Image (cartoon, rainbow, N blue to C red):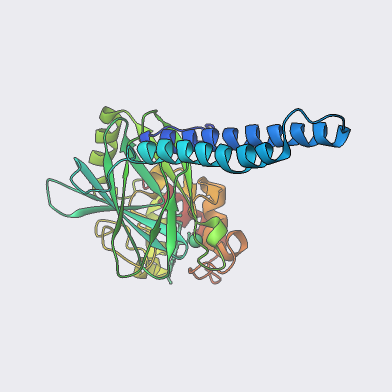
Length: 311
Ligand SMILES: [Cu+2]
């Protein structure tokens, strides 16, 4: 799906709540535009001068009091009625996903029904189309805000608190999301992607994510696995058979199956992987991962090959 058109647009809804929100945008801006046009027309007529068809007091009472009251009341009643149809934020849903916002990436967890343990991934949320999914949101550090405009409204993630959002994707596709609360240096590069797919595709994806990381098969990747251990990458990342352990960095257990690197910053491929490992600060300045300064080119290539093979 790499390279597919991605939507991050309130005006292209692909979720139940997003459709209501975009309707708000159209109706309220439409009404405002009509009123503005009418006022401008009256202004033009007034500037032209000539006889006045209506007495000034009537204009003031009609246009200044009655019209705004009627119009605002109508819009208020309509929007209150429509807002009540937004999905209730209850966790009584079929499916729950936990999302923890961190500086500057997203940890994503699914429950593995077989083991009762969490399947941990990052920056990419897979959802089955048509199924209401409750996202339990929290923060590992400062306040962030979870927002995937094509799917739903946005909600803050607050340290020490759980907030929740229920999403129902109505169209399969790749949707971009963005942290929407300033959270430091790399706030702008704290993106995420939602892959909305058929329930069958989703089930296959989740079953695959539940598997332990593949052991490297070819010589280059075997070498890469050694470099990974020598470089102490696992102190933050924990990839490999024990890779489901939470850490200060995103899980790399199935890194090769993801579309982007650095929370939606660059597409994931071997070139970007090598560049990221050598110096992530060149791609995302200030990122909370050290550059691997003491790594030779051959080891770097092997390490990138190992990580890319973690499908
Ligand atoms: Cu942010």
